[in-house]
Length: 389
Image (cartoon, rainbow, N blue to C red; front, side):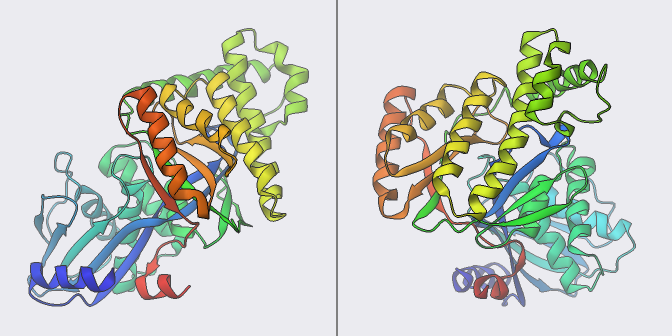
């Protein structure tokens, strides 16, 4: 891959790149829709990601080219950097603007980006581009940021420059990911634990439903509001700041305070999902993939029935997975209403699984999903270091 990209860089810029960096995408293994409720999520880095080849120039410009997109740009070093429409290079431009606003000295760069993350799949291609750019600039110019600084900087770019009000999980996972480890992360405190997650004879199948997620944003905001309503009701008797400050047992004792049945269901999912993350960490640490798989199915059922953020596309994938003896567990991942499901599939059976889930899905939905195989990979780094580790 690196050699192929170097050839492309030479074609485009007439010289070789001096440095190559890689940042992965991510999936959330379990712990869905609880990051804004003070709970735990369990993302991991995947083996797809964003590659960045760089060479300094003496022209005082930043040049942006990509093998995935036709748009390219040449931006003066000291320009007043602003977002331009919806083009891909807004992400690296936003990172550069943040560095310069912090008073960091940069010089002109020729940059080539290439990503093998499916665009729009919910696997965090935007966070991957932000983090690989931030890491590269920090490395090249000795800017002095810690890895956590780069995570916060990348989130700030997404929030303020791009204008997407995302949480910090995506940037954190692609920066701090470790091979064969999941990250049990508290999105509020940013405390985390790297959980041993050796998948053994299994791999992570990522099934992109290829359904546009048109409902996700409006329904997301609706769920946030419903959780706030539930929290306010529970605060009548409980001294808590977040729904995830309590466990399932405490919730059962006080759920009568939430008089709306739908809102009560939303809160039940959040509290129980947070408990499932803790149980999942134990299962993975003990190499108990059967128990982890059971928790994945339970998570999906809760997201489908209590939180109502699934849909026929995601349910079709998970329902098929339950019938396949070579699948340990499956669930939707991400905001829902489309996007991706994940499944733990025996490595030797992946090709057959891919064919069968595609046929089943196509017969029911009318178009095909995209199926990918991944392991749990490393976070951002210099490409040589990523390959060696």
